[in-house]
Length: 474
Image (cartoon, one colour):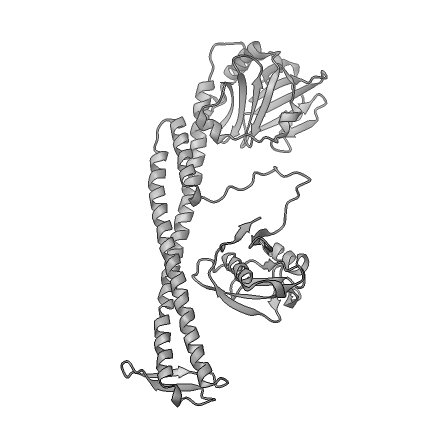
């Protein structure tokens, strides 16, 4: 009851509630279940009757449900086991049902074990509907959305409990179909958008890595120059700023830049070191490029199957097909955000994104300019290690050292640097330069906006963005 097709048929809605009033008034509540956009009153009795109220766009409904919901709907409407209505309506008796006169608001009068009265109101109009629980003194004990509409802020008039004429017509089956339709539509839109974003990200990453791989190909050229320098090393003098030599392979003349402060042998080692670094980078980038191509192919295949699921005509079967697709392709979708309003006073919201490296070293990552500012200039210790992707905007990252930065192994430092690269604008690059230092060497310039920082001294390293092996979210 309450589908958009019957938006103006108030007498019919009143008659439906009147029929339920005749059948169920005086029944005890067996239990109450509720979720993000719905409430269900389970009534005592062998038929396992219940009343389902939903606030989903396009499906603001009140309907009669016997036994379990159809499996696709049950999976789409997970209950919140800590929902306040479970305790507020515990052991209540359903004492009356009705519609507010001339308004699309369903009303349920309940009696507590101590004899006091409660009223549960479910609004079937407006942009988002609402469900509100009042006590006998018009006090709002619970509301889905606050403040509630004025119709839902006071006990209904006595005429509410006598509205309608009991009839045989019940729209509950059609209401559940409407609910399945709207849930399926919402899932299809959400999943398609999420998959499209993942596909675009994978394509962009593959394009960036292709460019990075082309740049990394210079490793072979650097090695060729280093080997040519080795063949002519006897001609290089200490303090030379360049070497004009000939490639022994083909006689090509080469000009190599040298560091005049180093010996010839040290310059040769520097050139070989550059070649090795480029070659290692090429291997890493090539592996990541292969993985990115696999990701693109998975997105294409998943998109084809999603289109097939969306085209299923039966609403319940379509909802089941979409849920099956989600289970099979969960790795391609972003992690679900925590439900709003689920935190409790003894579980305050935590600042910063947090990781644990090698089961020992805690790493904190700022999620905004304000958090970056708090993390760097107030929350961290002066001897913690501070990281930031070089030359681009990104999160401030702090590795907690317990006041002993010298005890942090190089491997843990590199893993923290990879997190800094991941949480930066360079996250799609093959290799990213990251600066790091003790936090005591980081300053915020005067009058600079939140999150601004400058380093008085720093080191840098090239790392691959990502969550390394041995790093877990906490």
